[in-house]
Amino acid sequence: MSKKKHHKNKNENEEVKNTQNEGGEEETQQEAQNSENNDKQSELEERLEQALRAYAACENEKKIMEKQKTQAIDYAVEKFVKDLLPIIDTLELAVQNIKKTEDDCAKELVEGVELTLKKMVDTFKNHGIEAVEHDEFDPNLHQAIQQVESDEHEEGSIVDIYQKGYKLKDRLIRPSMVTICKK
Image 1: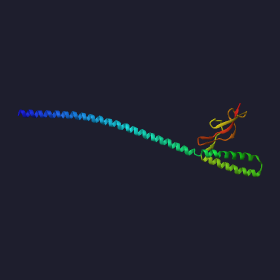
Image 2 (image 1 turned 60 degrees about the horizontal axis):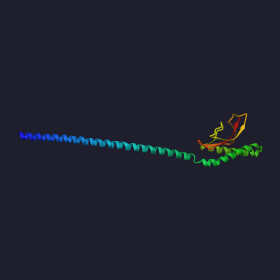
Image 3 (image 1 turned 90 degrees about the vertical axis):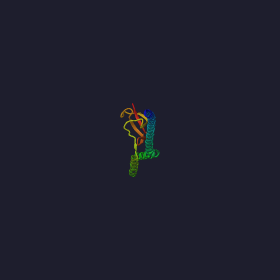
Image 4 (image 1 turned 60 degrees about the vertical axis):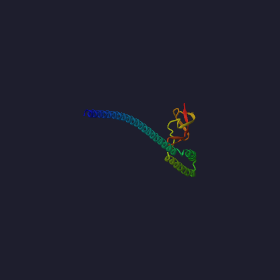
């Protein structure tokens, strides 16, 4: 019986050792698996970060392209407007010159030209095209073509306007040609 007990104890000891070895191997495997999971988690987070950055870059590019598209649409008529400006200048000049005459027929003609001019100016305004303001000289909006001495004006102020300037929305199409005062 003692041999059986001894053999039984030996078998139990081996089982305990095997269990401990298996437990140690399981712990090592568990640690390896945890390490692998951590590596995969880090890689997954890195790829997610890359994907989010790529998405943000695409969204930014989309906004830029939309802005460029809007500007292209808004300013597509710029060349056409530049071609129409001399017509407005001519109509304004015609009104000024016809008003100087005292002919009754000319007065009716002035009314027709003024109505045509008003209609063109209103149409321009409807499309965001307006004359440049002439309150104060601004080198961004006005082109000084001459300087004259004047007691009635302050130095650097606008004395006379030779040609009106126009803006399309916030973009200058043509600067005003003006005479400014010098002292």
